[in-house]
Structure formats: structure tokens, C-alpha cells
Length: 454
Ligand SMILES: [Zn+2]
Ligand SMILES: [Zn+2]
Image (tube, rainbow, N blue to C red; front, side, top):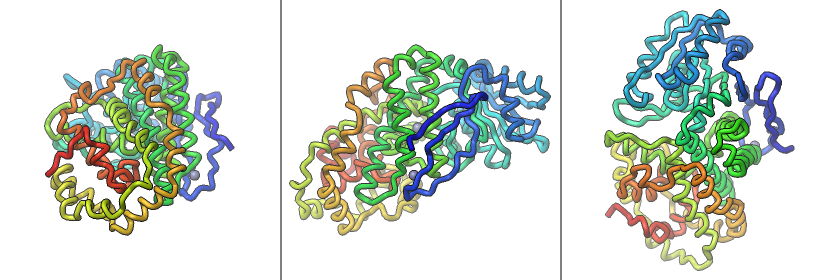
């Protein structure tokens, strides 16, 4: 049965056709997602229906307070809720750092029954970690279709100037009012689109993992994300004009990505090498005390960077590979360890190696993968052929005036080069980059990005 997205009279998203017999473990979608117009006034009803209580802390920053926070507070107060508003004032952008997290924590009292975040990435993540630590449920009111993290259960935060990820919780209720979303500036909308376009890479890499390693690949999750990203590509004009239809298509794509995380309890359908590279840029720039690019914008740029590798690999004749030669050129375990510490730093590098112990392959395993790829090259070509032409992706981004080059993201050349080499090493998750490396071809493919490590 095909996956279908519809809405009930309360604007609550209903997803049908998600029954699946694949080898992944599936969970029910037990969160309420509302998308529609004039939803702010209905938030008190949505909260009552879920029985979250009547006493809350509302989190916003100066900007999101103006856009929607004040209205949400008014709607809740008029409906008899007791609201403590925690508006985080900053001169520049509000960041999900120690200070912001602390401001929210100190606004919470023993009477607080739930939290409500009015904002996009930073406000939501700051609230999310507090919800997790206090055990209180939280509601997310989205203000910009700029990233796919609303439905996430992980909080990317800044701790003492370092980028960290902490397990947190998914909101019980997500409310996205289309008129509010349309007030987002174009660069935030373009950022959301960039985040969604990366799903083509995530899908191809997941299917590749199934071919090479027999990894379970959920067809329902793949279909859900593919339909959403295709709809976005086909309706870029609506998005550029911020029409109701355009905003709905974009926020649906961003939220459905999160729904796949709820279903299979991992981010396989939504993030792969393009996210690793973008996260690496962010991590290093933050370490250097610089302001990183927006998440979705950098995912869009890294998607454009890795896409040609897929197109090139589809033309590869793997029967020409010389296995003895590949074996002779293998990197030693010691050299790989030095490389990981160089790329990710002492602490980060050690942690990644600890968490992904199987990532240094035995020759037998590497040979098995190469031979599997040789035998299944037709399937691999079909996976890549199912991606739209790169030019189409570029057109979408141009139409939205999206940033398209690492220069526009202020990524220095050495960081760019290193990220193209080490993005694949961030986790065990299989990607075409790993296969290219296992086939001994990575240096050749990255000749334009010289190996930055002797
Ligand atoms: Zn993302
Ligand atoms: Zn499945």
C-alpha cells in the first residue's frame, strides 16, 4: 500500500500505508503533528487533548517572540493556562549554549507541567534538552521551515564553545502554522530546502548499504522521504513565492524526515555523508570561534559537492580493479588512527573510533565488499540512475537564491579538503564514499581535494 499523507478537520497529519514487513523494527507514530492556517488559536485545544496540563514555560527568542511567541502566550493565557515566558534576549543570534539552556532551566518551577518552544532550531533544541532532563513533555511551535530537526530526538548544542550532540526527546505536539512559516526570510527557507535535497544522497547511500552489506532498508521510509523531496523539487516556484501550498510542501518534507526517525528509531533515511560533511564544517568552525553556516544551507552545499561522485561512480568499470594493488595500498591501522586524531582531534577522534570499532576493515572484509560491488554493479547503477540529474537540483537552489558553494558558506579550503576525506569516517553508516575508498579509488576521485595529511 502506498504511503499517503492527509489531514483531519483539526489539521492533524494522518499518515496511512506505513505498515511494513521489512527487517527494520518499526514503531508507531505516536506524536501529534499539525500543519495548517490559523493554528495558533487552536494550540490550547491541542494541548488539552493530549493532557499535558495547564502550567507551562514558553521559550522563544526576540525574533520568534515577535513572529508568534506573543500570540501563543495570549492564546494560552486566554484559555486559562498559566504561562511563564522565557524570552531569550541576545544582540545577535540566540545560540543553544550553556547560558540559553540555563535560562530555560531556571524558568522551570515545581509547578511546571510542560514546556512549549516557539522557534526553529536553536529555541527547539534548547527546550528539548531541558524537557529531557526534567522529564517534562514539550510542544514545538515551528516558526521557520529551515531545518529538519523539529521531530528529532537529538539535541545539537554548544557546550563551553564546543559542538556537542545530546540524546533528548521528540515533542509530543508539533504545530506549524503556514502563515507564520511564510514570514521566515528567504535564506531560512532556502536552508530548509537544502536540508531536504540532501535526502537524495541519504536514500542512495542506504540502498547501497543494502546491496553491499545486506543492511535492512525500509521501503516505507524511503518512499515517504522520496515522495516529499520529489514534491519539493516539482513545486519550487510555489516555495519561492511562499504560497500556502509551497510552505506546506516544504514543512511536510522536513517533518516527514523526522517521522521516519520515529518509525525506525534512527536517521538512516534522512542523513548520510552530506550531513557528516556539513556537521564537520560546523564542528571545526565553532571550535575556531567562528560563526558556522546554517545547518540546511551547508547540507545543500555539501549535497552539490558529493553528487558528482555518484554520477562518476555509475560509469566505473569495477572489473578493471586490481585487488592485489588495492591490498598493497591499504592504509595501516596505525596510520588510520593518526588520521582520525588529526581530522577529529584527540577527544573526538578517539570517541569516534571507540563507537565504531569495526570501521578499520580486515582485508577479507574489504575484498568481500569490492567483490559484492563488482557482482551487483547493475543494481548500484540503478540506485544512482534513480537520482534526479544534478542540474535539476542546481536549478532548484538557484531559484531560491540558495548558497551553492563552500566559499559562500565561508568554508576555508583546508577545511573543505579535509571534510571531503574524513566525512565518511564519522560513523559506520555505509556511504558511496566508503565504497569508493574500499575500491582504492578515493584519492583519484578527490584529486581536486588533495590529501591533507602526510
Ligand atoms: Zn538536516
Ligand atoms: Zn520497513
